[in-house]
Length: 272
Image (cartoon, rainbow, N blue to C red; front, side):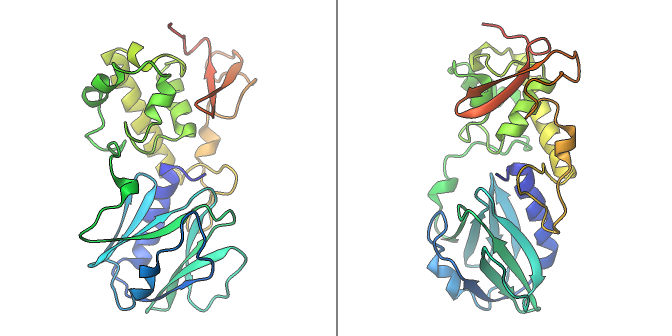
């Protein structure tokens, strides 16, 4: 499933090609995605795309009248192509521009979404979200008071979008390993100094993943079709039973909050 870095890479990839361009029409071949494709999209002929932004894992194509909200779901991807290119299997939505290009959405599992929110409205999906992890608002001073009230595992805590958005499973595992913090430790057991370290590692891991085009796991690729390369740097994620890259101890694995969790018992000491 594309995580925040992959969505940010998609944003950066499509922005130069569609910002400032005028929508000619939107072709919907499969309206039944995770939620029905918003019917308001058919009324956007002649509207200019002013910006492409991201909130959590949602892309926002901003116009003067409102925003197209795109979520890639489990297997969705976006490509900028010539508008006369014939669709292939699972090409469900085409946003066709008047310059002869189009933004094409492919989604084999159909778990993504194309929604609409007008300028004067808000979208429930984006309400009550935590700060962006790469923003200055996400810091130890912000997160420590929230963590002091919670005994859930710290990995599960930082993956809560109401606490901070976009810290997906891969990046939570890697950040905790880099910070030498065991993922099963209660969130309220971390000291202020440990939160400073973990927040910094989360920022560094996500920034590195974005720089390298995301993580290629399953079927993610960048908008130009190239794979992401961060997977080559994964130190614990998906490496259960292998040697820790630091101490050579075997990497452990357990389901935490219904997500695979990986750690090194020697490098990440668990404090009860």
